[in-house]
Image (tube, rainbow, N blue to C red; front, top):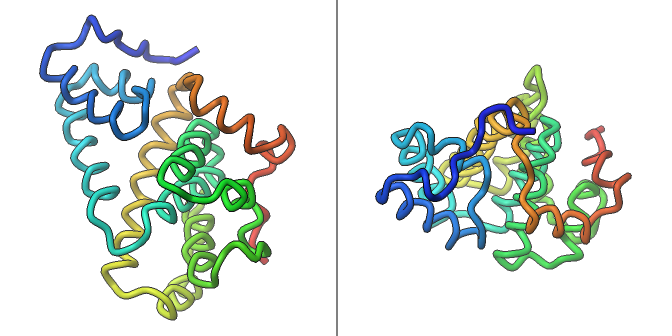
Length: 198
């Protein structure tokens, strides 16, 4: 059970209800995490702005951003965000077979060297203590410019907030991402997450 009760739509002021239409339009449902943030409307507004920028006009593919979110969340152990990001990857057009292969990104032919470099950094950065090294950034340098690397870091950092928020609060997973994760992954795959980089 969620440790801070999510508000119901009826409890929200009109301007907050309008803001939640953003989440519903983006994701197809209103996340329980957002309904909990709604206890502090200014936080919800700030978070909405951050998400809008990170998933808005982009120098890197938004599907890759969702995959980065999935891998950093798996490293942090946040199953809530893993379900949201893998569903999000499908929703923005990432092929289902590629989403299914995300935990094997290092060895799957479906991932490019550039994608592997971004996902390796995400997996390292999601661990506690943080395992990112200069080697991860040297690998990024071969494929991304500074703007693109900044976007990768922004996604990783946004999920740092979301992973802590949702895991600490034990946020309940909504039906749509739960159904998607159940379709994409076996229970063993879901629990295992990505293989540790060598």
